[in-house]
Length: 239
Image (tube, rainbow, N blue to C red):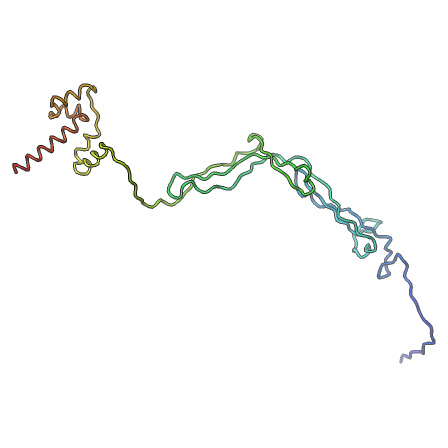
């Protein structure tokens, strides 16, 4: 059985040393803020940035501990330094493909911009990590230059009407092809005689003869066609 004696007015006070931590078990003078660890560089070339955040460490061996052991000391701000300041090697820079030059069918093309560029830092803006691209000669870039143009593969175009002016020769050819297919060759052949000779054949009426129809077929074409019309008319009258 536990008996509690009467308090005779005695008071107890407990004091912690100034350098003790809140739990009274650690001497805070043994700890300090330190910038020992740096982050990886933000860029592999052309001036990047590396940062270091303050960490609470043990003075004796630099081992990181909980920040509560350093909280009575003002925490330093993050440190920043430049890194990898060598220029980047030139590289190919390609833009977006344009729309096809045609809306349907074959023969269309897409294009894009392709340039050999070198990335360099911008004076006065290094802290922000900004940079600019300098266009250099294509021979400075390694590897094959990417294509700047390619063919479009689109669906076939729908049928549509087209109108155009017909010349007299085109009209004659069209009519002959439709109504007299066997006579079309007369419009396509070339005179085999000298240029000055065939007009004489036509003038003196020799186009009726088969030999001259062959040798001056182009010059005699109209006369041959007219002669055949006359024969058909006579045949209809006599029939």
